Length: 276
Image 1 (cartoon, rainbow, N blue to C red):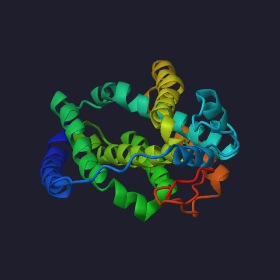
Image 2: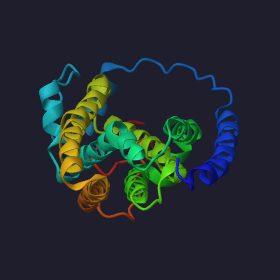
Image 3: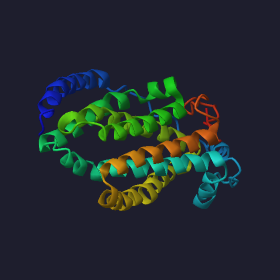
Image 4: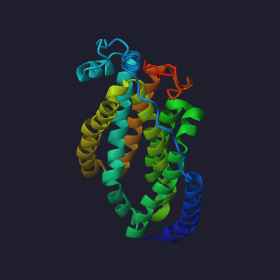
């Protein structure tokens, strides 16, 4: 560890300990919820028709997977959301698979690498425990904005630190990115997918990010590191995620428009309507 490492560790460890305490207090005991009554076939059909938009729902209330997939590309806003998801998946793959190599280049110790994971989780726990409040405060669009901006700020910051344990100062942004993205993306997919295919919709988003985002990120990330270095890789990833976010904002009406798909009966930015 270089000469800056010990100073950074002395500063970061108290914050990590404080974060553990905040996480424990924030989570608390989970509320006891009564299971909702089973939905009737008419309710399922109505919700599916609203979520799919132009896709027809058969009289029996069931929706074919092929109709669901067609509905996902039925409007520019939906396509832009998936483009943003792929670009962020590309960027996250670089962090999750290749970041420790960059830490090694910065002469960070193995202890710092392990501590970086702890710091990210500490910041994720209280945010996930307040996911409903985050959606109510920022809306789905706001959460997606925060996720993209935090990612870009974080990876650019990696390329500016003097080395060693100073990278820990940017690790909380990873927890913020994960928490805000997961919270918003689950809500968005639920609002544009009929309840009978909710799991299929979430799997589709995950596979899109994994197939086109993570796979391409790992492939091209290694090539870029070998030819241009880590600084170019992570700064380029910040630009790529920023472009994906701008694409999403352009297709959904700009960054100032709020979206709250968690509100029953509300219409979200992707054309889906949440059943009351």
